[in-house]
Image (tube, rainbow, N blue to C red; front, side):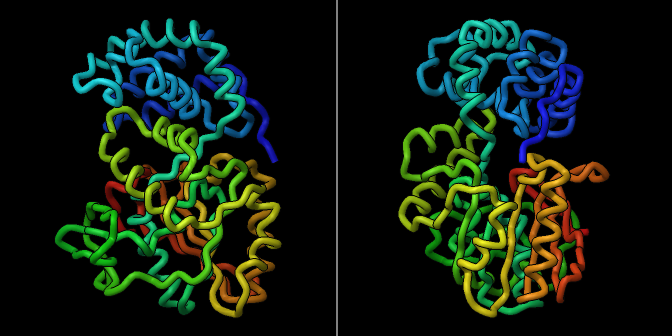
Length: 350
């Protein structure tokens, strides 16, 4: 179910919002570029070539960075990208080179915009999701049968294979974990957090319209291109998590996660608790599909214990919300647990 393509005015609004809400304080380069693109009709037209339902700012910037990382190290634009050079030039000066590059490489960028989707798979988000997993396991029991829609390469499906470091609050997870995720606490944490042990995951399955293979070089390169230029730590985490996923191989299959939810949930047999996860997925889903998801979950909740864990933007909140909905029968009881950084850097309990 695809959303309609936005017009030029809506595209400009999305680039401004992207600059102000997502990039400020995180990526000076993307903040400056997004503000400038919002005022440029030619680049807005190019961004409008993104697949319907996709966030055009993320997709355009990733398409450009993918070209720079692949074969563009000598391009004038490359000197502004911390992902390409150790000492990037000032972000405020980048737009003329960015515009020239986009218009000259228009065909290659359009090809990426039409083929790829924004499938950011940030493993550090698992540190923000842990409170919801722990609460679901406490209320419904273990092991959890985990199904993620919009799973990308399946890195969040490996949430029980990472270790977690919450600073003074404590650490939890396997001592031999290949990747430890550090997450800062803003404000107090509940007395029971972090849990003494990670919730146990039984079976796990991912659904994605365009799943990525952690063993495939092109897919790994695309995931790297989705990381913002200044965020070198995220690339380190991604490499570690992809190596783990390539070794363990969580099952991620192609399909519309909402349309196929009921059928695929049956692949996770048993009477134990079923857990649905979605992280930064609903922003790509039209309202009709969201209503379909709600209806399917009410139906599934009438058959077995069910938890819905979400990590999504909400218009009335200054940061993404970690939520938990527990279904007892067809009725769901939702609780917003925390606000958190979109890339897992910090969490603030509500």
